[in-house]
Length: 139
Image (cartoon, rainbow, N blue to C red):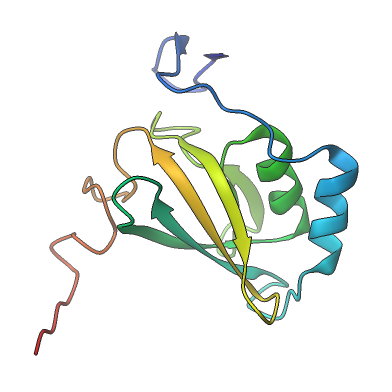
């Protein structure tokens, strides 16, 4: 798949091919079954590396972001500060190719298991939980 980057990035192939996880009809059925009770009418999305199982980031998804994610195989989120859908990597090139989509028991949170292209954190670390601003407490 060729991606046309909207910024200074050139058009280039992704190292991993995204694949749809659901048809549009199935995706809407899943989206309608979720409980969008969080900020701005969203579900919480926990993003995990499919191989290492590391938690990479946490975001929010509205019904449209859920459908776009399931039908394209690329992670889409809802920005609660900009009030818009965004494709992870649309400006940085650090895409998330979704390999598994899971819901929790209440339907108000999802887990995306992804192949991370580049880094997940906007501060330049692989995980938002590895940044200099992250707190780690161990027993």
